[in-house]
Image (cartoon, rainbow, N blue to C red):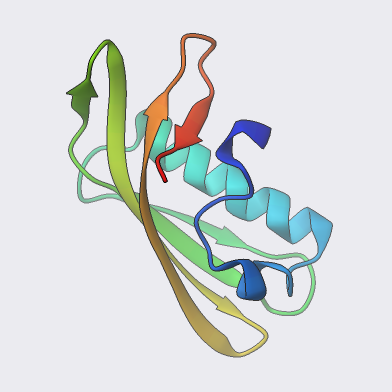
Length: 100
């Protein structure tokens, strides 16, 4: 999950998450990219502070030899709604790297 480089939530908002909640959010991003069908969402709920969110991934596509997907992460952190959008490509080792 470290290959997700902290995920796609805006940095200022993500810094408001506890470490366990940040891991839950990154795990949801990974699950959405790895195996969630188009149109389905991966939800997560934080252990502290009432944080929660959901991640949805778009249709897989190819960039060279890599499988890639666009995805959206909507979350509520400390009562504030935040949204991150981006794309990531799967590496040979199974990790995902966001495209900048």
